[in-house]
Amino acid sequence: MPRTDWRSRAGTIFTCEKRAATGSRGMVVTNHPLASAAGAEMLAAGGNAIDAAIAAFFTLSVVEPMMVGVLGGGMAHIRTPDGTHHVIDGQSTAPLATRSTTFTPDPNAAPGSMDTIDRRNAVGPAAVAAPGNLMGWCEAQRRFGTFPLADVMEPAIRHASRGFRVTPYLHECVSDCASDMLRDAEIARLYLPEGSPIKPGTRLVTGDYAETLRSIARDGPDLLYGGTLGQHYAAHMAKSGGYIAMDDLMRYRTIEREALRGTYRGYEIVGPPPPSSGPLHIIQMLNILEGYDISALGFGTANTLHLLAEVLKIAFADRAAATADPAFVRVPVAKLLSKEYAAERRARMSMTRTTRWSAGVAPGEGAHTTHLTVADNMGNVVASTQTINSLFGARYIVPGTGLIPNNYMFVFDPHPGRASSVEPGKRVTSSMAPVIVLRDGKPRYALGLPGGLRIFPSVMQALSNLIDHGMTVQEAVEAPRIWTQGYGVEVESSVGADVLAELRDRGHNIATVGNIAGGMSAIQFDEDATMTGAACWRADGTPIGIAGGLARSGVRFRPEAARR
Image (cartoon, rainbow, N blue to C red; front, top):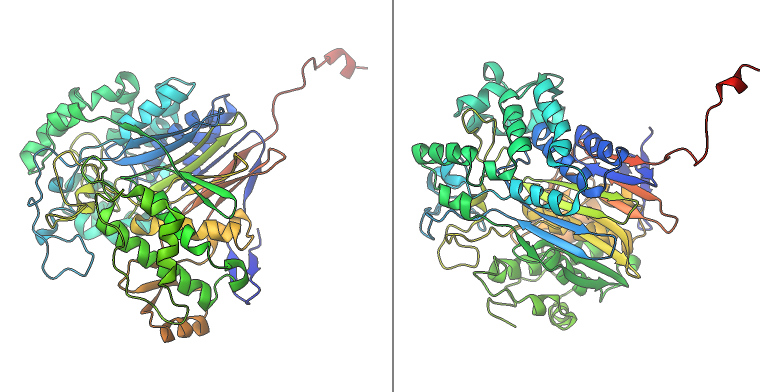
């Protein structure tokens, strides 16, 4: 397919490298074609969007092992046909044996970094938090799916036991982590054969993981949360310096949370609340931008990028100060969502100069991930972000299981006394932003992506692309992005030199990068019941739409008529 160019009124050009898919009976968008195919298989078999999503997640744990696995954590945002939004919080929790002083911060770390001495919170068993993904996936399937767990797991088991072709993207991810992965014989055997990153096109078979998946399909999530798999996992932790114990696994529970809601130019933005920081700060930033005519300023102009950088700095200052697990920190949700607070912050913004922002809220006031977006024609919509945190998580395999643990302890602040400091049983604060956007009470868009701290800024920009700039859903997910946490501004390299010069003149410390965050997946819902699915160039994302359907009632093939 030829690439298509998008040109703004200001002359900004970018190229869409992928094409959207359409369907009337269902849409599955994931970051790997085999996972999208697994979801589409469930829809074609008569299942619903939840069946498709869970089949896709188990398959992603096989074919995108650097991003997601059953030992990770995440957020599922499900809209059911009656219009109810369900948020299943399956985020990981700090082991009960950890404390705020468990890790020693690296004194030479960059500002905002969570680096610690010897990287104990990033690599190896000490970096692992209690897993929530398996429980969350199985709960969603049990409550909202229509197929047995074993049925939705079948594609994943098939690909793990038969093997799949390694993509260039997987090869590059292995290359990025090779030095850490070489420290563990089991993970190196699979992904670094003969000491080198596995080559694209190689058929990768993960037999141990296939057997673990078969056991889960037979015995359910209790196999990990108290059963023999959990016992094996806890015993390995005890021998290797990790903090996870059987008590962590047996006490783990998912939490159903009430979705957050905000508005932007007549659209309603709905998504998970803290400890997911994404939707909270997306709505906060859009509230501020609502006071400007972003459409008139134009996509990719210095004025628009300046405003995006400023609202990102505001959001990150407030996030660091007050957003965390609400069981441990009183997050000032109402204030952050309010139009009045947005007006206060907007009043301090300058169009000609960057501002040094500090937090405007405090507690107590009134990396690498995967995402999928799935919908069916019955009214079910799933936007869900799941992860093992960094690429390949803690970068080792639990012996004999094929399981790659998360390294979620790297998300906690190693400094005591902060909103996101380590506390036993505390849920991680994530930037996940699986959002569903409504127009007149009906779904209009559903989207999300992986990318750590760059997730919710990227979703916010995609929403502005759709609502302010009138982009198609394919253009919105592929458009150039900007990001800052407050220490410097990253801009994707497709932004023009003249625009970058203008931003530097306003005081922004600009760095151009190849990409910001990961592959976004999105679905647009149209009035004629057509769904348009889009995935971007930043990952192996693939949309698959289901159309057509069963034969008209009463139609029969009459062979005698064919003989005449």
